[in-house]
Image (tube, one colour):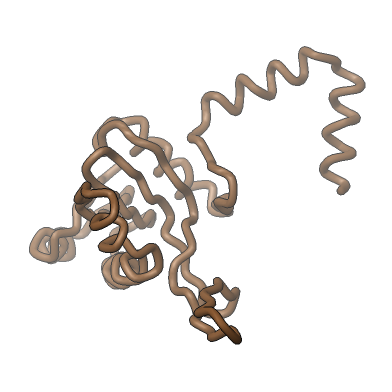
Length: 171
């Protein structure tokens, strides 16, 4: 509520020029779609922005902080699936193109944690969003590709990533 009041005060003081400048700043940033959580780590957000703007992933749309790892619970009549905060994981970037979903983990330095996280999050993404079922219904098969976006790399980990089918993007 305080943020809304602060925003409205700026609009009141600055007039329409504030809104125009605000929208120009938003247009220069990556798109964040409704229901997607804002990344709190600004360095990782900057790396993701650079990756999407580089064109290495192709044309598509980006979804930031996509939740995975649903806790399953049973309702009275219907099978109910819900996200619960405890145990919830997030994929830093899901980039959807015509023929693939890119799952990207952003880290400042390539490490074993990032490798394990992206492999596990791929499995959870397939389960939670019923990718195979969607493919059958739509008739379009989309490949799920995984990658790690980082500033610094490690040769031995990068070789393992190559064998595991993980693309490493050094920004």
